[in-house]
Image 1 (tube, rainbow over the protein chains, first blue to last red):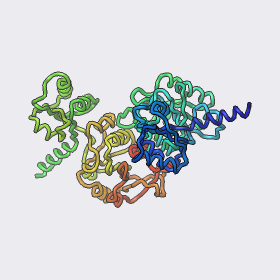
Image 2: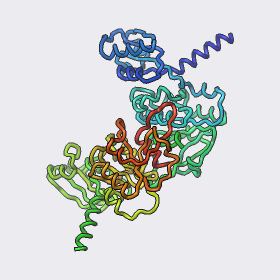
Image 3: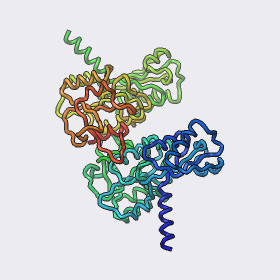
Image 4: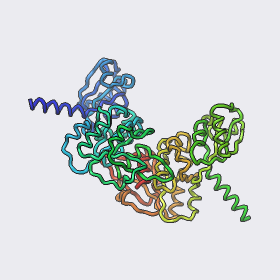
Length: 254
Length: 254
C-alpha cells in the first residue's frame, strides 16, 4: 500500500511539472529552447508532412521524445485550444513547476520570497512578471487557474522563453484560500498600498508572499483580507501606480 | 539686441515644451488629465459638431484654450499624422519637456540621473519607461527623434498619462552625438552589460546617463562607443536579459 501510494504521489508530482504548449510556431520555438525537456509530442493525423511539421519532428527526435498521433477532436482535448493549436501540441517537463499545495509540504530552508498573482489578465504582463521573477530573487509564482491569464503562446513570448525554467506554483483554488494556507505555514502575506507606512525597500521579512493585483482594479477584496502586512513604493510626480510587471521586478530585485 | 535675443530664446524654450496629441479619444483623454495645460486646440473645419467634438470643445473652454480651425491639409501638417488625427489635434504645454541641449545649459545641482533611449521602438515599452522614470528618481529621459518610438496615443496610454508630467529631453541629433556632449559636461555615460564587473546596485555615480538599448539588438555600436562605464544586473536561472522597461524601473528605483 505504502509503495502504491508513493508511486501515485510521484506520478502526480510528475504530471504537475507538465506544461502543454500548442500551435506550430510556439511548439517549434519551445522545442528549440536550450535545456527544455520534452515528454510527448502530439500531432493531428491530418497534418501534412513537410515544412514546419518536419522541423518539429526533427527537434522532438533530437530529444528522444515520444510522438503520439491523434484525430482532430482528441488533439483539441489535449491542447484545450482547438482554434489555435493548428494540429500540434507538446507536453514539456518544467522541473520547477508544481502546485502551491505541494510547495507547502516541502521542507523549507531560510528565506523565501513568493509572488501571488491576483487577476493578472494581460498576457504581456504575465510574461514579463515571469521573466523578471525568474531572473531575480523569487522562489515561486503562485498562478491561480481562475481569473489570471494562463501560459499560452503570448505569455511564452513575453517571458522570452523563461517560463520553462520558472518556479510556477499552480493552484485550482481561489487565491484567497491558497494564501490562507501560506499564512498557516508562517508566511507573511504582503499587499502593496500607497497608504502603507513601511516601504518595500525597508522590508526584510524572511518568508513572504507578495500579492500583485489586477492591472486596473488592484487586489480583490477577498485577497486583501488575507494580507497581514502592507508595504508602499514611494513615487514622485504624483504618479499613482506602477505597471504590475514593473512592481514585480522591483520586488524580485530589491 | 539683447532683448530680442532673450525674447527669441524664451519663445524657443516655450515651443520646446509643447507636445502635440492627435486623434479624438486621445485628445479628449489628454484634456481630462488633471493639471494638464493646453496651449491650442486645432480642429478641422470638416468636423461635425456634437458628440466627442463637443466634449473636446468643452474641456478646451474650461482651460481657456485657444481654438483654431483649419482645412484638412493644414490640420495634417500640425498633427503630422493625417491617417490617425481624425481632424483633431491639441498642443499641450508640458513644463518638464525641453531639449537635451537646453538641459545641459541649466545650472545643475548635485546628483542627476538620466536615461537615454537608443532605438526603443516598441510604444508599449516607451510608455512604461516614461511611467517608471516619472515615478522613480530620474531627472530626464533623452528621447532622440530618430530611431525611437515617438510620443503617440499608444505611448500616452502605456505611460498611464504620466508623459505630460515627465522630464522628456528631446534631441534631433544622433544619440551618440548628444551623449558626447553630456560626457563633455562631466556626466558618466553608463551602459549595461552582463560582462561588467560592477553591479547597478553598487554604483553610486553622481551625474549619470544610463543608456537603454533596442529590445532585440541592444545598444548600437555608435552609442556603445560613448559609454565610459559599464554595469551589470546579476540574474538567476541563466536568464540573459530583462525587458527594457523593467531595466529602466530598476535604475529609477535603485
